[in-house]
Structures are given as C-alpha cells and as structure tokens.
Length: 348
Image (cartoon, rainbow, N blue to C red; front, side, top):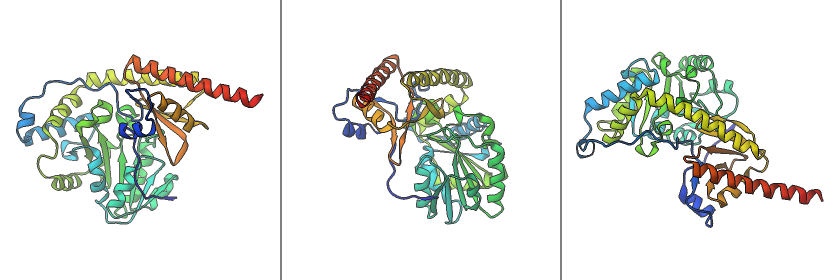
C-alpha cells in the first residue's frame, strides 16, 4: 500500500518537453498522451453556440444521446460536465471523508482529487483490498497498462461497498476502445456506483472539455445541482450531440485504431521493444533502458510518456500522419544503433 502526495506530472505538455529537450527537432511528435490523433471531423458551428447561453433542451438532448451510446439505463442517469477532470473531486466528495483506495499504478489525478475531498488516500495493488475502503477507485481499462477488471468482480465489489455506505468509482475514459462487456454503465441504477466517461480521448477533441458521470438518479441530481445551469459550453454541446450519435464514424475509427496499434507494436518490436499492454489508443512498454529510449527519442522530437515513479516503463500514443510514423521509425533506428554499438563495445 502506497500513500500518495505531491504534485502530479502529466503527458501532453509541450512546454515541459521544450525544457527537457531544448535542441530537439521541431515540431514535436507528441506521443505522450492517449488522445486519438484522428479527431472527429470538424464542422461549422451555429453562431448561437457562441453568442447565446446554452439551451437546457440542448443539454437534455446531449445526455439522452450519451445514455444511448454508453449504455446507461436512461438520460436521468447521466450528468454532463466540462471534462471528467472537474468531476473527480466532486465525485470523491459523495461519501464522507474516510479511506480512499485507488487500484494502481494508474492515473494519478484520482488520488489527488480524493485528497482534496478530505479522504486518506492510498494506492493499492491488490483488488481484494479495495473492499476495505469507503471510496474505491478503479480505472478500467487502466491507464497506462490497459489492465481490465471483469464486470462480475466489479459488481461484487460494489455490493460490498454499498452495504456500508461506500462508493465505487470506475473511470472508463478508455472504454470506447475497450471490451465494453465489462463496462458498468448499465449497472449504475443499483446505487453506490459512479462511472466516468471521457469524450475527448476517443473523439480526439480533448480541448473541447466534455465528460460524463453515470450514476443512480439521486446522485446525478446532486451533481447537477453542484454544477448549476450552463455547465457545458455551447460548442461542446454541438460536438457531443453529433459525434456521440455518429455510430458509423465510431465503428470505422475503432477498426482504424486497431490497425494503427498493431502497426505500432510491429514497429517497436523490430527494434527489440515488446509491447506489454495498453489499448488501441496507447501502447505500454517495459524495458530496462526505458529512460534511455525516452531521452533518445525526445532529442529527435518524439515525445513518449515516461513515469518518474516507474522508470522502467513507457507509454506511446499513435502517430497522426505518415510523416510522424517515418520520424518515429528513424528515431527508433538511431536509438537501436547506439544501443547495439554500446553492447558491442562492452563485449570487446
């Protein structure tokens, strides 16, 4: 069990990348996030989405479409928010301050948010230990290794927590590309469960700031009260309504991401780096020279995700163009050549 504190480091910071690699080839190829590089097609927004306050009816339309897309029991079980990040401390505060256990290693913001809500936060590696918590948090599929916890196990844990007034929070930010049969979206009416869904990652529009919490109706009503009117901006409403309803685009994108992630596995594998997990939006690698690979690629303007508390692992997102694929291949080849030259030198 690991007690958590301190600042949180994230991927996706080009400012930090420029400090780390001041002589890097620009522009950076940012593979440090799990955001889809092929975003939902942009379209002309109605001028009223910017000039007028969002209409309540438009918000209800969004939650209705989200309920259908994610498999929630009804629109009354869905609350929309300006990104899931803003939901984290509010959801953690749904139970009185107590013991919050986060199944890790995982996305660090959950621990920070639970601490903000007044909980004593620990990261645990044993699933069974979560039953001892007042607030249990699981990312499913997990970030960064793609670990999946089966639905039956999650439901059994929810029963244990609910019996003592506890709460199970399931962050399904990457379930759009995960095994949806293990989603708890359809089970939230049982109570004691909150499912978080992120819009920006799969649809590649993270800057839009749109996310959802799925739960029983009293919990959804409480969260809506905390946000008040106009929580979701007009442009986010328009993109959410259109993209979540576009099932054809979603199916095609899932197929494309499967092909791209297989290509990424094969590319890293050519240079002796085997995939150890992940989703089709990001791949997870474990190797002794993870820090060396991170630095070698960073110097060539290829930004991966490195973890200071897990120096032997890396996460890589997907290149967004053929030029980026070629730059990644060239950078990997340069790193492998230096590595192999070093091995030969040692062997002399």
